[in-house]
Image (tube, rainbow, N blue to C red; front, side, top):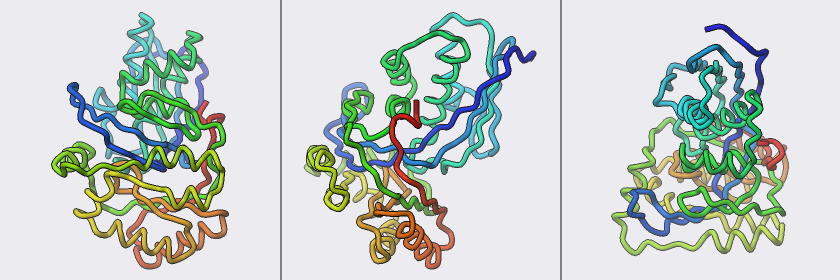
Length: 295
């Protein structure tokens, strides 16, 4: 492949769920959800350059496929097809976001690819157009295109930005366990009558801007499902809260646990305490981020 541009460098930010309610299973197989999503300062780095033809995806890990099974590859293919573009792209992804962790790492990469191609090819797609295209690739891709603090409904593609936002430091802790999103939702469906309303309360609380109150309103309908199968998640939460975190919750379908703190010093203290007891945990201390970082 011949390189035809100097290329582009982008960052793809992870997310956490401040709230997650599962409302119903839809006829198309997806679940209707309501959730408040928040981008955080843990990111993958993408380098993209145009080539004469094809899609060449390169990663710094062998744990992910570098072909059509990868969301970033599929995002590139969909973009090129939509615009009838015959030339190709080379994509290098330096992964930092843990894989299959409930942090939308794959969706973040796909979103960055769409933004990058829009710039490289000067196709001038609007933010709304990119979000609609992203929804065809994955439910979390629209949020990853927008970033910040956002109410997400539908299957996650209908976005309402919460302009007040959230400003906090976050501890992210991933235990060495695997959790299938499909399994989590399927198991949740078997628990008939398990209804939650975390999101409506979270939206109203965020408007007030009080971090302590926001922390008190954290809630994830899938947490009980994953926690029952993997009690270590509860242990992570307990240690973080005992060491200064305002609150702790599982993100998405897991297994990553996060904690909210007021400042970096407190976050680092909680992270160190967790690592001392659970050295197997993959731990990060990062701030929340706004939509500007994702754009």
